[in-house]
Image (tube, rainbow, N blue to C red; front, side, top):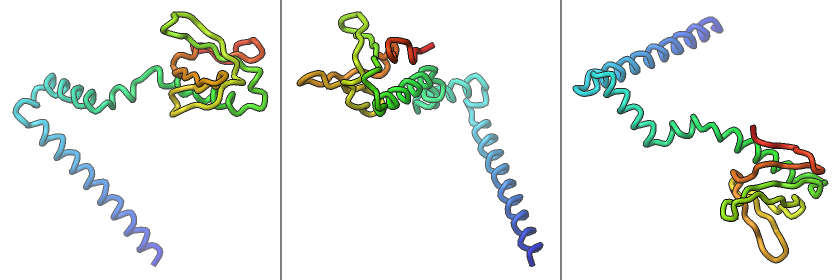
Amino acid sequence: MEILDTAKHYFWSLFSVIAVVFFWAGVWDGIGYLPYLENPLISLIVGIVILASSGLIFKEFNPMEETEKTVTNILRKVTNHSRKHEFHIKYFDKNKNKHFLLNARTLHTIEKDAFLVFHTGAKELFIPINRVREVLHKGKTHWKPN
């Protein structure tokens, strides 16, 4: 009985694979024979336009994404660190066109993986994470982008 169940399993697996191949061949040949899409250059342009309009091409090939994930992870660790007062965060202020250094003691939270929220006295300061240039620990560089 067990051999029969195994045979059925392999049969339906093979059947499914064949169905997927036939489906893909139908899509490939069906779209490939449309009047304007027979030209490979036109097909390439249409494919790029579809990927660009969906945002997928920009999401998948964003070279800054890895850096943003790394700095976010490091800043999360600093936020939860028991001695976060030993850390400083250096960021670039676009409006004043200069770098500033803030003590991580005043770092309250990270909002939506996009902003650092600092409590400085009676006001809150929001710093975009992409403006962070360096994280220092006891005055020495702990993290800096490549």
